[in-house]
Image (cartoon, rainbow, N blue to C red; front, top):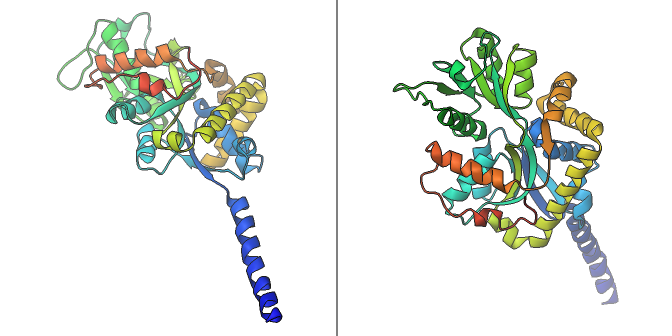
Amino acid sequence: MKGFFRALIFLILPVLFCGCFGSAKKGKAVRLGFFPNITHAQGVIAYELSMQGKGWFESRLGDGTRIEWQIFNAGPSAMTSIFAGALDLTYVGPNPAINSYIKSGGSDIRVLAGAADGGSGLVVAPSIKYSSPKDLKGKVIASPQYANTQDVACRTWVLDSGMTVNNGAGGDIKVLPVPNADQLSLFKKGEIDAAWTVEPWLSILETRGGGNLAIFEPDAVTTILVSGNKFLRGNPELAEKIRAAHVELTEWINKNPEQAKALVLKGLARIRKSEFSGELANKAFPRIKFTSQINREGILKFVDNAEKCGFIKNKVDMEGFFSAAKESK
């Protein structure tokens, strides 16, 4: 009988140890999204450090918590993933987050922190001598995506200038949604006369397309960190640790801009499988304000502009959107 129990113990112990070590190794997974862009520097840098085995978030979350990185190229797809329960948090532009918040009736999507302001504006073709909005009357301005952050800014600017947007039934200026990566070729061919876009595409149109920066938005809300309400309710302490780690990373970027830039370049090269121009990074980086502060005024202004442009039909109280945030300005 003693031999039987001794054998049973030897059989059970490995299972117990495997379970314990396996659990410690795996830990809890946090699914965090970002775009492969300079304006998502915190996400790109943290991703690159994770790939190097020096995880920024991982080292601050403890308990074997790991980050499962998810890379997106468009805000709507990131927000869809949050709604589907396939993503916990993401770096994203304000427009997709606001639209999703309104779509949920204010019950889902919360902003945890700011990430980047500025870095967006209007570049006009070298053939156009720009001095006022009227110089673009009858012209075509590209925006990255219909109803995205820069598209709303462009359409609002047209309306505020006393002109109308040509939506196919007549108007002063045609706003044409064109993916950022395709704008340069159309710019060179003369098929678009200007582009309202964001870094590094502003710098690309300037340096490679000969364009001139006519309008720059230094305080425009460009990137924020948001989460789904389900994740926040189920993991309040973990969500706060992530927010705090993001704040710390943002401070590090501002104190170490050259090191931060180098990590962004490495991260983008890893994701895109090609080198990203250091020259472009040098031009684009100073135009972006990396901040963890939430630009509440800028976000609310954006909501008003989206409503003015007809993108928001049923505006809801925005206070819920800010309810998980600890800092705002």
